[in-house]
Amino acid sequence: MTVARLELRDISKQYPLVLANDRVSLTVAPGEIHAVLGENGAGKSTLMKVIYGAVRPDGGEVVFDGQPVRVRSPQEARALGIAMVFQHFSLFETLTVAENVMLGLPAGASLAQTSQRIRDKAREYGQEIDPARPVHTLSVGERQRVEIVRALLVEPRLLILDEPTSVLMPQAVERLFVTLRQLAATGCSILYISHKLDEIRALCHRCTVLRGGRVTGVVEPASESNASLSRLMIGAELPTLPARAGSPGRVALELRRLSLPRADRHGVALQDLDLRVHAGEILGIAGVSGNGQQEMLAALSGEDTRADPQSVRLFDAPIGTFHPGRRRSLGLHFVPEERLGRGAVPSLSLLQNMLLTRADANTVSRGGWLRLDRVAQLAAGVIERFQVRTPGVQAAARSLSGGNLQKFIVGREIDARPKVLIVAQPTWGVDVGAATQIRAELLALRDAGCAVLVVSEELDELFELSDRLQVIAAGRLSPSIPIAQASVGMIGEWMSGLWPVAPEVDHAA
Image 1 (cartoon, rainbow, N blue to C red):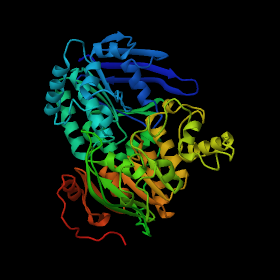
Image 2 (cartoon, rainbow, N blue to C red):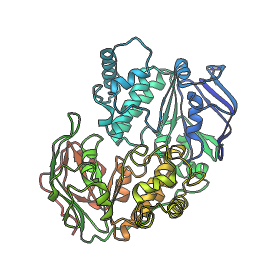
Image 3 (tube, rainbow, N blue to C red):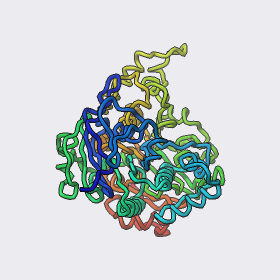
Image 4 (cartoon, one colour):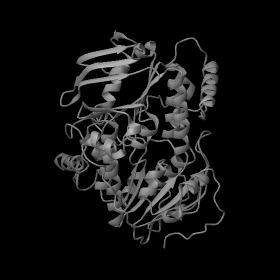
């Protein structure tokens, strides 16, 4: 019999208030693509960190290539041939792509040699990466590509991927799947964490399902349905969203021929962007990562105030030079695509993070004193409403799983009852049940009269949520098209910049 590449025997990990892993056992064969499925907080990421040496288990045994091992650090894991791509990126923003990659490789190679290896490996697997770009200039989708190529460069025997497709467009996902199948054919084993059931069924040979830190089943995904996988994962069928169109009102948020030169040589220049979001509708923005989404969002949120005042308008008032706080006071709220560092401060508690966008008359007295009891009530309300798994409002943001932190950040802004909500990647890393809840909350916000702008790299999500769609490509925006007249094929063409010069359909009234 073939010796297993990896075997976990009764792995347990207890945190102060959470039993993350409860005697978890798992076996992965050489060349196998093995999924680990579970809702947010089920213990998946903790288990992967145990394998990678980033977390030490309280009990159990890890066996690698038939030999019991104690992996005490990621360095020891890499020496064994274990590579991991984290859900939360582990990149230094002030360094270039090549400098970041060098940190994870054995000493000896020069920066020029490493840069060439990155280009070669990216080309081999159909990726596109500039080794000289500073990481802080990359979108989350581009950072994901860097993480994947960095892991591939160590020629791993076991590759761990934690939500690798959460911010990738369908074409990039297809290329990644080709890459993973090529790797598996060479004998590399792959542990694949994802909440996307269709992906798991299409890609993975076997699947271990976790619920509440325990294994609830080991199945062959190809022979399962989404419904049966959902029952194993959350104990119930997947909820469905009601299909109903919005009722557009007055124009709430508008871009009028917004043009901005690139902020640095790695950025994207914006060219004559026209966009209107009406009260009571959801406008979706599709596009391949790195085509100007970051720059457009910065101009809309107030992070970039270089725009002509008249080119960015809120309820027909020019706000192009307003900073984010002033825009927020006028009812415009924003959920950035990066959770840790921009959406939340990792070291601060959820209560303290609540104040980042909710410091108003309800939480701060006229004398400037913080009303912490009210802040705590707000934070607790978001935790309960959005079913955030956390010990309480004093828990540090970095202690939450990626999906639970996403639920808190999105919930914080929805709970503020905005007049306009801009949200980037709303369900990044969120399990299927929670994703449905977030999408339902966005639809409810729309139905209450809020104007919602959703920027996402998940076409399925955009088709499920949007009343209208536009596509951004190379810093330009396509015409708007009602969702009923759009198709995946059409939007795919538009993402290459191939849209009609004049729209064949009208904007919402």
